[in-house]
Image 1 (cartoon, rainbow, N blue to C red):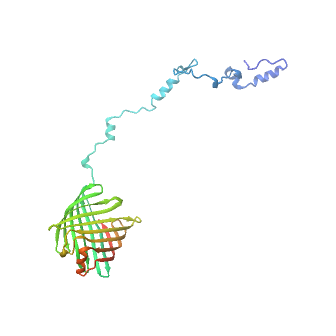
Image 2: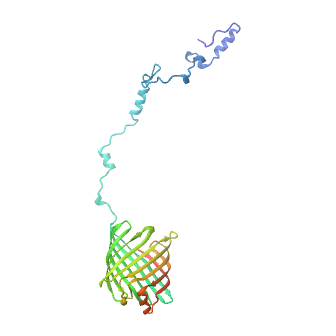
Image 3: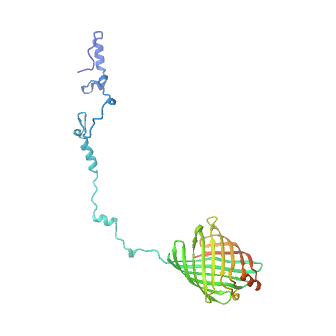
Length: 315
């Protein structure tokens, strides 16, 4: 066997030379290779790699001939489990034919009825009741509106009216309305042609502005604005301002030209459910101009402040 050690110098005995030969490192004797001398070790840091080409041959070594390229191509081109081709049955199962006639769609026609105010009071000048309701039926763009409001005091009806209007949506927040209004009180019953707009202004103010043209050419207008302030998820404060205008004096109906009346209210309601909400509030009403003069002549007050209690409901 060939050993990595030279024959011992004359000063070492033959036994010592034999021990060193037997105990030589195993790696030096692996497959008969001798250890690389330190002077023959390769310093890769000083090697010139600039001659490495894209052909796979570096310093005379043909890596392509070593078989690595074929193994890589085989691993990338051939999947472990080949995917079967998509058949017509697979497409039919993934995209079945839809029978639109058998589908159930939500109705395009909806409706809602709301009593915004259904209230009563007990003041210094007697008891009274008031109501204001609104209902609609139709689609998102075309609706039939029904509005009514009135007031009773001292056991008699002081005002009552009903409006039937067609509304057309002109924007996501506004409707244009047109129709008729019929007054039952005050005075003799009469009808009006009605034109107006209703919707939500910036900062969530709900606005109703309507102009009425009477049979004799009388023109009146009503503007109402309210705001919903949600204190909690169920406790809601709702301020409201309403103003009436006329272009002619009508003593028989107790109204004068110009600004007739302004009503301001503040109501606090608690929604037991979304459909049922009792409330309490305070309302102040004042008449102006010739309307105030007509009320004085009838012995009525031109100013009135009252505490009200009622319920708001919708269905």
